Length: 416
Image (cartoon, rainbow, N blue to C red; front, side):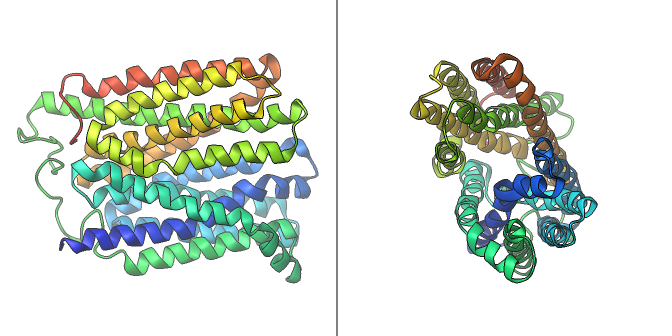
């Protein structure tokens, strides 16, 4: 692989992420509203989120398995193709007023959302260990452009859907079908050679060699294997905890704002700032991971998330700026945790087992988000928003000892 090839492949990944980001935004923007209209019940409006999550968990495992045997190109392209098929199914379900088809299609659509997140691992495959943080961040940050553009096209895509005799709320899923389909085509045609390895090429020797030692001592070095297992557990734990905390607090913030007299405009502003903080700092986060080490940034993630929980706990219900500041910290802490956790997990796995294991890791992340979103409602109803925020802060504090687990028995993890 020439020196220019990794840069070209990273550019292909970034371009595909920009496209797929628009598809990712469809479910978030109108999924609940479409379900509410078709089901005739506000209480069931959360069903799409649950189906997205279940589809993302199943999709992550499937994409990981395909990537292990056929390479990243095949895994990611098939994942996005499934997302496009699910999006078209949602449009058909809306036109036919078929609730069973809607549920099935939303489940398949979740594979596209899983692919969007799993593409960051392909970025990590392209560079040496000391540059993994920046590569992961480049792929992750590219999602922002599409995710911002997607919601702004709701009116235009709704008009197109209406012109075709389809309910307006299904319009964004037309965009999602085109976006996911385009991303699948770009990756299928241009992601060559494969970022994980060329077909038939054995995994490379060296720090991430096939023996799994992550060092020069070979497979019989039990100390090295113990360090790698701890590193894998730490990276996985950091990402699962940060996802759970982020989803739980983010999901209930608009509900809290509306309950205290704030309109949808205020809630939209707070969530927009939060989403920006989730992705926009990615280049800086990647640089910090490469310079200070993933363990240090993962530890910082726990501290920042704890600060977000405490600030949200103390924020007066009438103060939109205070809640917005808490949600910005929440997004930043999540970003720190995802980039550092991804770097730890990637460095702990040999190339021949990396893709499949990463699929299981992302399935755990998706399920953690489901737990956070499901549990946050009852906690809010029973104890109020300050208690929910405090619980999230306490859970976030657990990220710190989990991150420190990566260093036990071994030195600096800066170059996994």
